[in-house]
Image: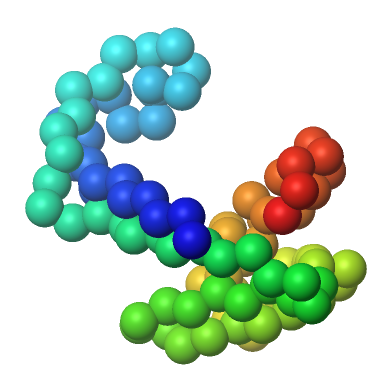
Length: 88
């Protein structure tokens, strides 16, 4: 299993400028995101949210969802990893 945590942050100045080589005044906050991942051998991806439930979709059919739109960001990351040749 792979486990990762990223803290949330608040941006006091410079919102959306940091990834454009600008300056930002930000700080970590007491909220964040936890991600756990296990490799599967059935060609499926399953995303679970404590707040929104579960989505399961075949890797061969990755696409933006019209329902369960909360999962689209994670599905897009998986699509990019596949396109870059990263085994998922």
